[in-house]
Figure 1 (tube, helix red, strand yellow):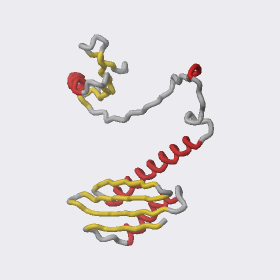
Figure 2 (figure 1 turned 30 degrees about the vertical axis):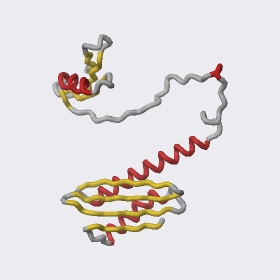
Figure 3 (figure 1 turned 45 degrees about the vertical axis):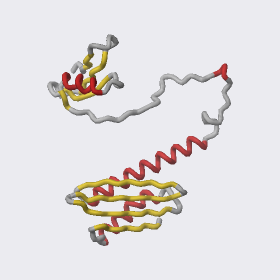
Amino acid sequence: MKIKITGKELMITDAINDYVEKKLDRIDKYFENAEADVTLKTEKNEQIAEICVIANGERYRAVTEDKDMYASIDKDIDILEGQIRKAKTKKEKMMREGSIKTMEVSNDHVAEISNEIIKTSYYEIKPITPEDAVLKLQEIPSHNFLTFINVETGKVNVIHKLKDGKNYGLIEPEN
């Protein structure tokens, strides 16, 4: 892997250089010929690492900031590895024989997929009161429920809109 390391308002020491090269070995295993452009800089109290990897005509990029440069580099490598694995999995699915795209389905034999998880959403759970959860849910009319940590009990709760459209339900664990 060709690696170019640039420091902006930061002196690139041998230790940082070796660390970046060692960490980029995790990315190098996915490609035969790849180029990495690493830019390290300091702004106020933050250490910013930007890593751009170009391989097989694809471009992967990650930018993170942390109080520690090494932690910022680690975060970038984790992000890049996730992007590369996701792209690789996507390509493999597209290339597989018998994929949905290559199947010919007649109109009278439409397959129905059920009981499968088809979407995953990630969100932050914050400690709030059930009353605040109702207010937060009212702010987002497209959502029907909100998961939160109940400040009073310290347990995960769910507030949801009832079918009447006016009232709300609260789901709490028993224990």
